[in-house]
Length: 402
Image (cartoon, rainbow, N blue to C red):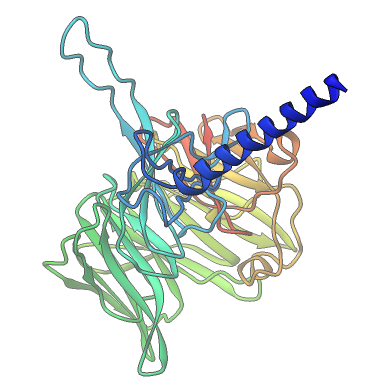
């Protein structure tokens, strides 16, 4: 009887304590305290819009999917990121601890148009620009990451248009470029070039990145072309299709004159080197994709030991090597089916030395992480420390530590 009485008293005490604790959490736990409100991190590299509105850094951002391979975002980004070398912080005194250098990857979130900076090795994510421009598809960056020329669909008077905006990464005010541009790119650190299609052909223009000093580069009867920087000049290429023979031309930045360098090739696409010496190109031949490089001065063509699309490559800093996403299997209707979204490719990352024609496998996502990545929008920093790429299938941004 005595034991039962003791158990009853203990039970009552437990209930009372529970009520006190519950009342505390009900009335006091939601109040601000000395700890502060924690930042919510979704695991996708995107901050919760309802928290940390000041845009402070997020520690431990991104997801380490495999050794040296990080998925920076799960949500889609605009195609085109820039990777910057961040040097170590100088030591103020002998007792100071130096801050190590890093590689910073700047990108534009597709849904919002906000600009983010991701420190790769420290895994710190910071929103550095919060101007809202929903639905951005592409971003062409000034090399120092200070500004991106972004393209997105807009609607004016009930009609869809392609708008282009010069977006400062710091979040300041930029400016709009001409409506309806089919391409925009950056040459060096000070020049932006654009391509405007029309009923009678295409008009290319160049200007400073601030928008001043605009002039017409050329007017061409060719309607469907791409334009890319090539040293101090340009390369214009007809739109790739396995059903149509394509051509590529060098274009003088001084005169706007065209000089043919490639073609006719079906499915032709190009990637000029920043040095203005080589052009990597891919094309179709008897239902297969082939990838080669031409030395424009000597007209020497070298076929690469791997087969991929030029859009899946980026030049290394020496301009004598390229990093490419190489498909493990190639459908017969490339590149058309891939452009139209009918195929999602599974790529492995390779480095190809153009001097020795040596191809080195860098990473195979299907082997190390059992994931499929259709690589596009590749970029690397000037130290060749990190290579970034977007997964075409879902728009997510990835980076690999070289």
